[in-house]
Image 1 (tube, rainbow, N blue to C red):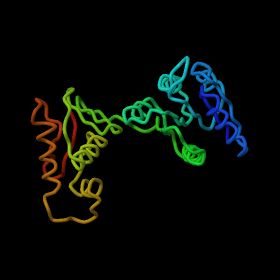
Image 2 (cartoon, rainbow, N blue to C red):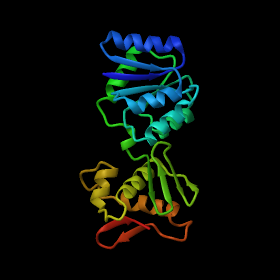
Image 3 (cartoon, helix red, strand yellow):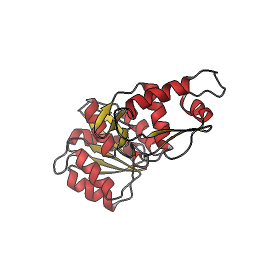
Image 4 (spheres, one colour):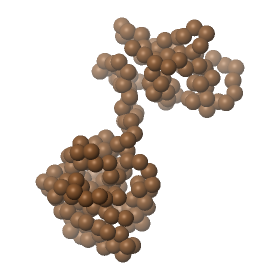
Length: 223
């Protein structure tokens, strides 16, 4: 495995590089964001490790720049900043994983191995949008026309399914199986109740209706 390490702390960089080389991997090291960006563009790496705080280009800017250049190599971000907002910012920029310092090499190695077995996060949708309705799947937030909507977990899951299938007619059975994991009819009005609650939050305060009932068939979300 070929690894790029962009880390300005000499001891940390040496620890990472030495440990991975001992496992037989090839490791390149840059101590600043600008050189890291050029290396990420010019070399075919299996995975890249970026520090959050870097001279030249900070870690988040580096990630955005690399992703903006079309590089899809998995990225793991290292940082002493362990706040949720810091982690979310890194993930939204295009990082695939986030490890807080101090860390064990065993965990770092395991996380990198996992990253090489799956597609990078960039290929996954992180924001769904239908008309003026927007759902952020990382932050778990929903807003319509810039107004934040307070949804319960099941309401969020139901709306997510509707938005992922915008424009399609979804039957009651499809909703029960996909949102509630019911592979039988519970003989309750659970779907109708949650659709009604969603409408009160998503549609009622606004002029345009997004959630539509298709008589005799099911429901559809569209502008």
